[in-house]
Amino acid sequence: MSIENILIFGAGMMGKNIAFVFSSKADYRIVVYDIQHIDVHAGIRVNAAPLISKGILDVDKLERRLSRISFTTDIEGEGIKNADLVIEAVFEDMALKQKTFEDLEKHCSRDAVFCTNSSVMSPSEISSKLKHRDRFAGVHFWNPAHLIPLVEVIKSDATSDKTADTLMEVLAGVGKKPVLCKKDIPGFIANRMQHALWREAVYIVEQGIADAKTVDEAVKYSFGLRLPQLGPMENIDMVGLDLTYNIHHYIFKHLCSSTEPSPLLKKLLDNGKNGFKTGEGFQKWTDERQRQSAAVLNEYLVTMLTRK
Image (cartoon, rainbow, N blue to C red; front, side):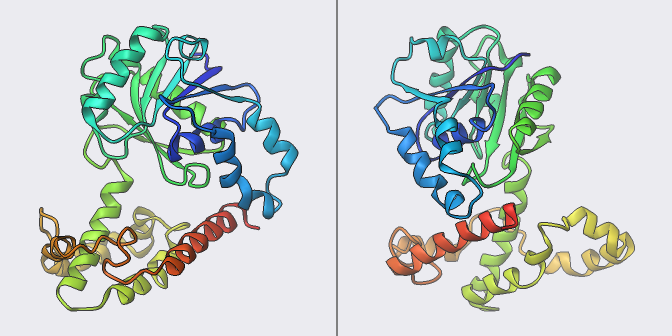
């Protein structure tokens, strides 16, 4: 499959950053679509500012990349008709996503590859009403999409090997680290592991074993430090399967195995405590603490990923 024209359907936070990712390759022409006019270039400039301040990206190169990105509100325009690859980044609503792709199938080429950026919703279900389901897959970019290397390529129950292989190649070509999820299961790969950790973290707080700040520190200053270089499967091989088996045999019965959200989580929500959105969740978050948290995270990601 030849990919030259890329359509990003949805110009929100994820859509803008995904467009920026593909602009790194001079061969690509990127069109961003939304139902209302959005200044995509301005949004990208804001997100690229830390890269420029670190000397990772210069202003001239940024402008060249932006010249490859155009915006449209015209569903019948050339950017839609000529798209070789479509990545949907609309709200996480099943009916909306299904209708989006039904409409796109009417306007795009039969050969176009369709992808959903959904972080949780089933590609099989999203594509269930399409005629040509073999060219549909999930491509889950992680936020912020221009900084996090991982993109999960998720095969639906009808995705062809050719489609999956093409997406893996295209994503690797723009500097991403694509991984293939061979089965369409809830949470795909990384979110399943992330939320297994979150379940145990919330349980430890719920049971009064440690407070929320302590739980975070326990992760940040122990195994969290080595995770970027030492994944769980390699770590198991490193310490030995025999040791791992014995630890699991002893500890698994003591870990949280609930299939429902934590009662503590529900209690906090019922009391109007919704994290950053309300200024308090498991911890209190002033506006300044929220800004600091976001700034520190972005600084860390830029530094770690560029080694500058």
